[in-house]
Image (cartoon, rainbow, N blue to C red; front, side, top):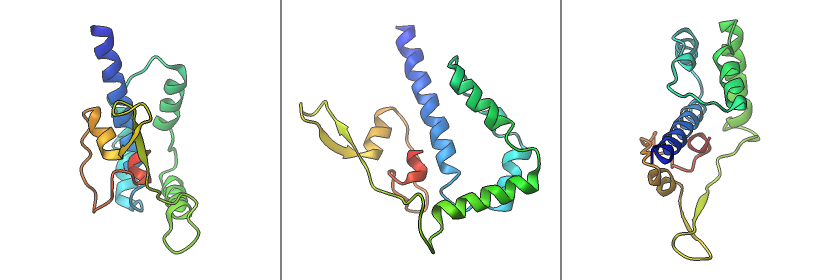
Amino acid sequence: MKIAKDKINLLKAYNMLLYFAGSMIMNEPTEECIIDFWTKGTLKKLPVRSSNPRFIKAASILRESCQDEDLCRKILRDDFLRLFDKTGLHLAPAIESVHINTKKSSFGTGGSAGDFYRSYGWKPAPVAGVQDDHLGIEL
């Protein structure tokens, strides 16, 4: 029973980490946000642990990702505008999605992304009317 509970908690932790990362790209990063993010050590304080070597490597890269705050601020803002700028070609357009709920029928039934998230006990707060299936939420 403990192993099953540990796996569920690990899944929740991964989902929260992905939700956190996704929420960072939902709005153009402001200077205050970027400065606070690195100077307060937000990534170093995340309560997520894993024995997966790839996860450990990825987390360590993120935790040590900024040595020059001015350069990091510029790169983060440029990346955001390149991916999500509303005035040009979107390299990462927000696209609606559904998940397949195979419990309802053998062929699967479409459900909302929010229902999928809530099935794991995760209740994302609405952000300025952005739907649960927005790219920033899904990441």
